[in-house]
Image (cartoon, rainbow, N blue to C red):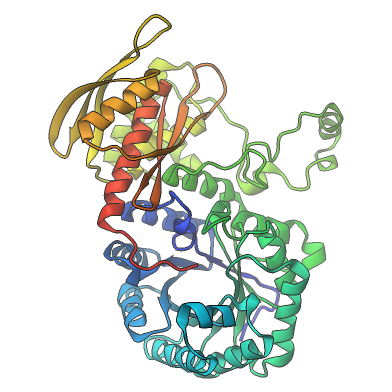
Length: 514
């Protein structure tokens, strides 16, 4: 089935399972931005979404399928005709479409969720794969909750769907229950007992509930699995999924042990991580492997001494290998449009004339406020001015009065649809007052779950990055804002979260899957 037995296919589900991470909802434009970066990263398959879930998801998958040419585009579908038909409508114009259909296989799911017998579920799995094959020969099947499924029944199911035409069969650890040794043993058991296993590619999809998703995936590939399903930064349902950057760099760094390789352009890893953080507003913990702020930081004197003498003493991979370079200060208020365009091109971004005009003005405006402009500042400006789509709410003007003898107050103007509205708010501090003013203008009052401030770069004049999480009807969204003034950044983050909620309310998921 697979020509190169040592190649691991990377199936990225950031836009599907990753988006199920609380607060990670994205609009169509944002999903397309992420999909294009995944294409640049070199993933083999992009799971673009779950088309039956909502009209918004359907439209996002369809647009990604039309515009991404170098990756297979997969759409998720439950094992029924309606889902599969909808999935195909979304991806039929893709250069390389894939239908990914699934059904539960564990007795606990069959008894309490599906309320069906093993025979009924097996027949539905076969029927689903057969129907999907009527559209394309690129069909993937997943046995949901496979790690809690009776092994012999799992063998029967895998054998049957391969016979029905599944080119890829996924063995997911849906609830993050398995440990590496037993997960590896399960994959080995399938290879030993599924007689037609050579006719398919065995895939693995691990959740991180016990913190071993990457370890489980590595255990599986040593036993013959050749597709790993993962997400950027490991985002996803509950504790998340196998982190793409970790699985790829583990295989890349320890080729001596695994003897396996991927087609990922590792120099694009950090950029992909940073872009997802900007789009979703979900920050990466500083000690996160590969892409965390401290991943290549060395404070210990012994470590620093060793690094000065020989990098390999304390670095098993270079920062440059994942796209982290020393931050260079090159932009300022005297930089011209061409210089700015060239620098963005060097960073990997191609800008249209309209985009360049917007960004140039913002770069010069920022240069008037802070002395040094860093690449991270430029990425923040790019997201603020280019990546965000049409919003219902926009900040026009903000003035805040605060201090130890003043009652914190905020006066502001916002654009609500096409109307400019002015109001004020009071609070316990400048941020609280600003949020009060926004609530007065928008006539909203969603619970605030999280408020976090980070400096994008060093220095007291650093560009402040604020993340705000709001709750709505059982869902939550993350909003992000960046500005040299942290109060303004806070306002922009709150407004961004409101805009995400507006999108969410129009495209609430009707179906949710783990």
